[in-house]
Length: 121
Image (cartoon, rainbow, N blue to C red; front, side, top):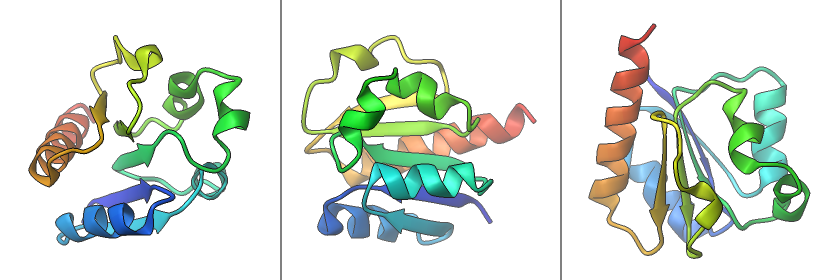
């Protein structure tokens, strides 16, 4: 069973995303601090879906967000209500989706990224 980390400070959005991946083990958190703590403790995920602007953003933003999360080797979908120019030219295993977004799009990207990641191992 795939493991997914959903990080978004908006409970409603986080819960909706958690529910679309009902065939996976999903962990939902509400801040960068919580998500980085899980990752630093060695928790492995097959997919990370994370909002960008949420508690802890200013501390993470002083570094390159892509580089900060890339070391955890999981595919990532970044979501934000802001047009993050810094997130253009992402690696193959990362996508950026602007809010508001279609849940079908998030699910399709997530499934594609997880399948691609698993076929490379």
